[in-house]
Length: 236
Image 1 (cartoon, rainbow, N blue to C red):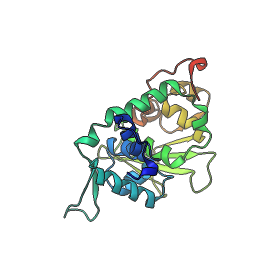
Image 2 (image 1 turned 90 degrees about the vertical axis):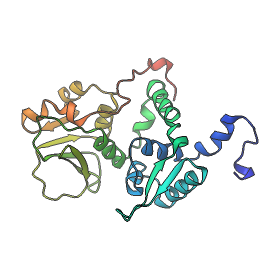
Image 3 (image 1 turned 180 degrees about the horizontal axis):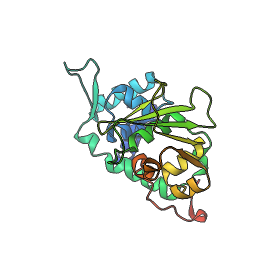
Image 4 (image 1 turned 180 degrees about the vertical axis):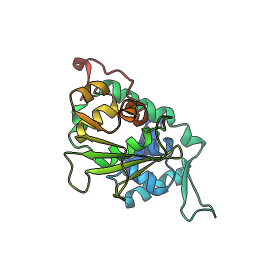
């Protein structure tokens, strides 16, 4: 650690903060903890981070012994896995997220939402449901985005869920239409799912046998059940 980036303290918190609090580092750890292992998958979870900077951060985390880079003959691409020390950071990363969900005001995070991150998050929360056909295709239309960011497809197949941003002339089973803000609020649990549908903040189009169980197959953030503190106690 160079002297200009060091707090110059022997305090363990200070020593950890010197690299954990670098921009994007905690989000990279979040992606690894949530199961992303390829460079491309990690990059999708930090969509606004340059690939060059991501490469640098992964090299630093590998050098420190928090991440291991693994190369297999079975795949041409390297995989990144958390070491035992990296896995031990799960309580740190998720506790920070839990605190934020409970105590931080939501408005600042809704001012400049990354549609790419929302789509990747929805793909991660989506779950197979016994009532769905195989395959099952969901078209998500974000009404407030530019043409390049408006459309995405969740492909449920063989109990796996993939995200596609290119139209392959899918035979769509259900379409979801919403603004990025409204869909984010539902995903995060900031807006009640049924209320959002009732108020047409999120619109589901498709057979009722699929739309009536939409909350189960679409899923929500793991933070959605954490209750917000009263507004007068929240911090910005």
